[in-house]
Image (tube, rainbow, N blue to C red; front, top):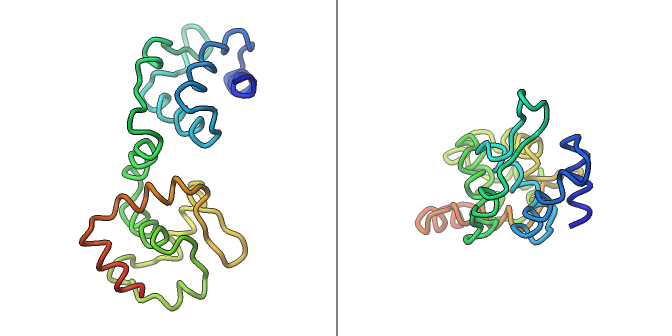
Length: 168
């Protein structure tokens, strides 16, 4: 919790005493997991629960609104919502990657998935820029297993069967 408070204080340019309650709420909602904290903060900024006030010349938030925000479906749901906002081709490329776990440049060359993802390599590179995938040499892998799980859950049962068959 203290580390979250230090991070919030630094990022929001506010003294730690101002960000303490926000840090407690973020910690409570995310159980302190750094990936979940970042995704949770992005979500509350996007929903304008945490926003910059020109009038006050600082970041402001509504503790009650943040406290009432449920995470009942967990971070997988939060990540799934984020994934749904990405371009369709990128989501399709991530679906392929979620079936494989990690994907290698030589595997990309062998896959005949033009019918599903026109330019798989380009989409995977974009996913790296988005922070969803990490690239180490010729290997692409999800930056977190929860991202892979969230992506895999986006695939319908029928689509999953077809995709696995084509990859195989």
